[in-house]
Image (cartoon, rainbow, N blue to C red; front, side):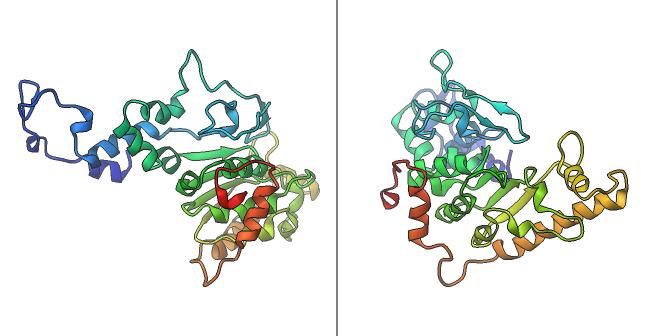
Length: 295
């Protein structure tokens, strides 16, 4: 449980007058009789999923959650292929989407769950590539998009014809976003031990236009298809030498530090990404957004 929830749930039971199962003599104590902050803490526990939320797993139907184009499948984080799952099984949504069932209990709970955008605020959203990320963010109403704090995405392979730059630019339209983790396992060709050319990676310059954001670069060091061995193999070096492996790891760490030294800084006087560029990125998805500013 996070510290906020722990603090919120710390209250004196004696403050609630209870006798024989009655609340102040007015009948059974209901969840909605609790103080608002206690209800909010409980609903937050229900809405937060332990794992990541993968929008591309779900078919259209629950369009409050999914993008409005059907997905037949996509690449997973480590390169495996998976198909779309039905959003419902025997009429029920999966556990990670419990927030939407909770919101149907009654009007007051719905107003709290959706009014606070708990599902979007509390969960990490994972995408197989930046195109999927962009489409999902464009499809959301602005209140829900701005509530998202954490995103996990894969950096697209350089030879794919995708507009990574536009996807990164659009992150400027996510006012609440504070952390993005980017899987760079597909970008081994952008590294050279001792002299990185990562600046050639599609979207690299656009990533530097973001502000007030923590960026984490994720990659595999060991096992099959790991980034370190791929980089070392391209350079025809010995992958068993610790010094060589450490050189690659240090290069990636320095790159991440360089990105964060800029991106994690406070916003300047004016926006680095204009409203026109954000709208242009959204229009490139060919989706009809529920944000009127994007259409």
